[in-house]
Length: 448
Image (cartoon, rainbow, N blue to C red; front, side, top):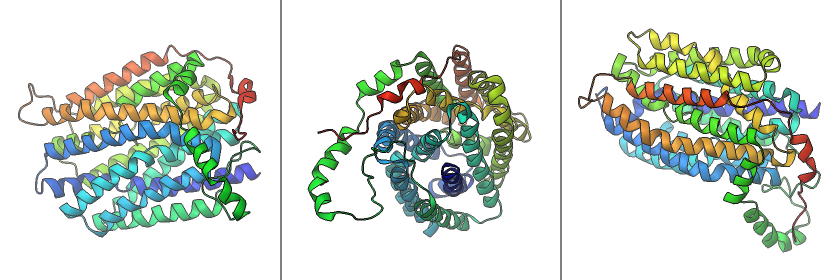
């Protein structure tokens, strides 16, 4: 019962955090355009700096995610969740105060610095928390529900943006981010996966102060020892063929992913703004359709389909519809086509929970944080490559210098990348989970 209570509080924390993060997405394009290119519907500078921002964030996340996951294995999920949930507040607070050019640049820089740690880490740690508390046979459904909670927050956040002014959007977002941090610290129990768990980084209270002072240097050394080396990550990737294949699929699908957390979301918005003159209200409507369909699918369909089809086949289904969804965007001939294509989210939302479930079954309970961190890091590395490859392509084909008229050419390239991930996913074969065989490898004892 305690574990189920912990999951309820985790879901509420995730909902509040995602609500705060997602509700600013429809508005940030207009804020960026107003700060950099006021009065214009096309702005190559906005596309380039958004791509640069995502590339730097992705590079930082690639380094940080395995470290965050590994630290959570040693010091507990709650302690590590506190950091990104708190840091998320500060960039939002800047735009809540003002959205002039100088404040936009302050937001831009602070967003890069904080998101290198925050981007993806809340989701990564939440997945590890769920894996600690849910048996292997139910993990795919549990991961789907976790993603469904995120989609529900996505719907509520973007729908609220539809009825708020730009200033109010950032003010409400800041308040919700603060509420998320307070709720998590007060109500969320830590996920203890071993009685020999190291002392948390963020202590719940003071005890034996003199003894703790003497142990401080040793604890600091242990934190540095938890930093996984490249050899450690390669060894984990090579430990299972299924793990390696899932990592490849994760990289390619993240390279193409333009869904909730993808780096190509802003180029897609710029494409729709230039092609059909979409503003924040149309973006919000489009995102609400995507989020509602994704929420229904993850909360209702996935718990039924995952046991029946298996994660491997459901992954392929999700990636196929992801590719088809992007190709429809790229050839949109009327303003209603993006809305119809958004309905494909009923199926493409299956891919990420399935990848995470497949990976979680290939490692022991003491390696859940590390494994999820590595997959998140691989996805973040893909987010470095995505804007570098596709942002210039988007800017080129939306400009007068395009070699031929095809505004959605970069989006079609994204669809082809997703098709590559689909083909790779067909090679993943269902094998018995090995995580239960690796319990004996867990070792949280302090090293001398």
